[in-house]
Picture 1 (tube, rainbow over the protein chains, first blue to last red):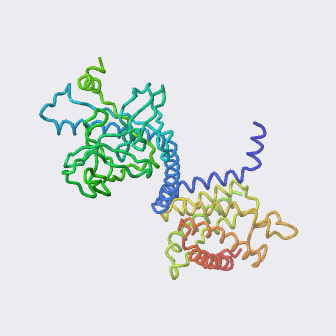
Picture 2: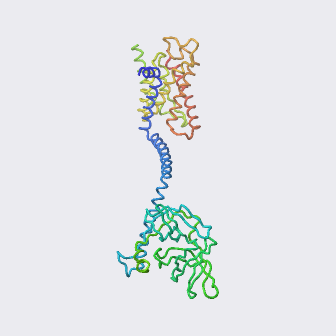
Picture 3: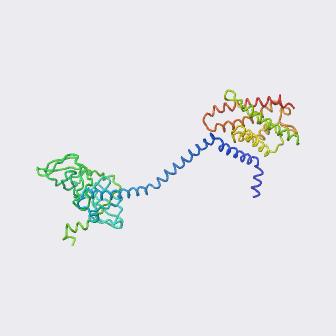
Length: 273
Length: 168
């Protein structure tokens, strides 16, 4: 206290000068329109810059959460989309209780391979999240594969790039259906088999899921026809370029067909007994 | 004591009136604004306590500000002048310092001393005044030019006044 007092007395001239000068400047920016406008401008430039920097920093910190939100939002939109698609196509027997119904569960890819004959993908969702074997998996650009094994927190997926999987597919618009087979060579090309010779098919036609199995809703993109040959005069040999680039996949949706059990029970009564 | 007190009050009033009524209306070539009212602070006795110097400067600046409708502008500049005055006096003191009872005038310490003393403090005053008036960094050279010319002009008038008005 005494030191403070001594300090004040010793420097009274400087302190008084600063005090009065402060008052003068307060008067200046308070009562002179040009000077106050200048101060306002500078203050806003400074605070604006600071808040810009802090906002971008905070945005960066919350990127993960925002990504998660976006994925959930996507899943929700997919859900409503599949509902509307269904209700538009099958209006004749729409019935709020029994119409087939697909639920989309977002998942991240944590393991992936494209260069083997039997490739697998590992996802970060498992039985805790309601995943069961044999569920379909789709990505942002179309079909991915089918869930094979499930643990508590993870599941493995057999992608189209696996010589065990033969997903059903159809030619968009003409509706002739067959199945997809991967020859095990190029990770971007698959074959469409079992299309009858009288079907009209052109290069550039879109191939999509047929919906005749319970795993996928109909109309999910698979790829585009890039080459058509007739093999031995009996079969089409159709090359399809996959719309999904399996080398840069990061997140996918697992499809839960809520009414699958009921449908399979009806279709295979003996095995499900 | 009372007599000199009244004399300074009188000086204060005369200088402020001269400034706001006459010199505020002079603006030669758009550059030169003489601010002769600072003479009041220059002529205060050597013995004036430093805090009183500051209060005088504040009062003087504020009065001129109120008449020229620029609150704070002249006040900040006169405060700087008052703050620097003791240091400038010490800087220009002769070896013997200042005699008690003498005043900072041409009559006591000569023309050269008075001119140096005046130009230094007037420059400080004008510098802050013009900077605060323009209040931005652009056009610095233009402003410096104005400051220097106005300093010369104001100093000329102040020094001349010492020979024609404050002759005693």
